Length: 133
Image 1 (cartoon, rainbow, N blue to C red):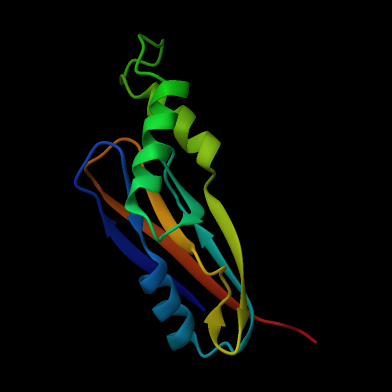
Image 2 (cartoon, rainbow, N blue to C red; image 1 turned 180 degrees about the vertical axis):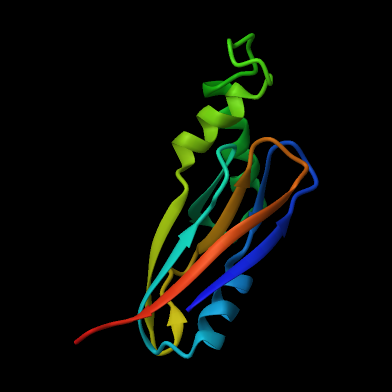
């Protein structure tokens, strides 16, 4: 089963916690045991798992990415090459384990949609599949 989640971003660079929305999509899929695939169909956005207890962690990640990939004068005429590079570092997909109808994450883990060229209206594809055991 596939669902498409809408993600609205408010800033140029932002990490949006989508853990609740993904968990709800898995619950409503009816899959009790299997996998959940997440895919971001954008070249200037990504998806990651990281700490969700302290909001300073996401701020630090964004600051670190800005330090690694500054806004320079790149050849790409749209002026958002830094966003493309950051998205390439974050990646566009994740695979999660579903057990007992819910995604399996560590105690401090959350799922973050990473916006690098916002604000925009974005999409997140969520596909659930039953395990063949």
